[in-house]
Length: 458
Image (cartoon, rainbow, N blue to C red):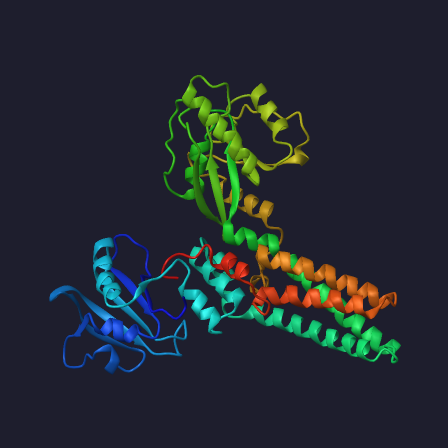
């Protein structure tokens, strides 16, 4: 499969100024040459062009000019896939890009499968597994902070730390196995202490990495927040304020929102998926009943809640009911309409269970303070640059948990003089688990897991 020459539109489909068609493989130059005709004195055919140069010309099929293009010639091994690569920049738009791609496919290239470009780079040693995953994170980044977190492992900083950890464990394993080969020579007390110190240091580093898992997940996929409350308390207005644009319909008529609306906002660098829900009350028709059912589904999936109350009205029984009902969720109580005379009194449940933030969605008062409260609720402490260098994902988390458990069993074996063979077996399990992170231990299922979410042309 990876010996074929492949081609795909590498830019998103849709209207735009430019689109890029990428060709990769041993026949990339020959395939491109069959449909590319240079224009001007200085332009060359792909086979005659120097590497890393751009040629001006046109794409022709059946004697008919399809588009004027710029063609970049990138010769192996100095390319992303370490293969000969051609990138054709044509005019944007779904039809224009497709018409340029058609003769490329007709002249010998195969359509690329989703996520087929990056696996070639990995299998040629151009990148490792963590860098491949970081490329997907980079493409899917929704905030500048998420983009920075993706760039760090892409530069190889996480891989370097993981490889250092694996090397330490490998050296310890070699030492233990050497003593297994010579059973008459017991491990000297000082040597045993050195091995234990090295293994304990490895466990500490694994635990430091594992502490970044939750933050890494937040930056990669965002965190879900349901905006809930009685009808007409300002839930849709609050969503619009947090997004900085009018996304939801705002009306003084209660029950305007009949369905859930999901939008992602950048809250102090963190991607937060806000879900505007239908007002919680007794449904008056089937449509509202379905909207309220969906609201409860969103509540179940949300990681925290923004419970909106109308500060210009006294606390209703329904408000108290919802306050008690959401006790199991992280939440912020948002008192809206603070620009009006305040009639909302205290609450009958301990205020320690939630934080109260006063806002006016009409004027924007308090919205910045609410953003600060949201950030503090989902991310404790300062977001430091060194944290972004080694943030792990769920796959790394699973591998590190297995490696940590196996390493701790090895430590226990060395401390209690258990048979060294058992300690060596656990240590080899740890080494293999760590190797999975950077691809030193790879399986087809692992590759499928990593590249299953890549799109065509990536």
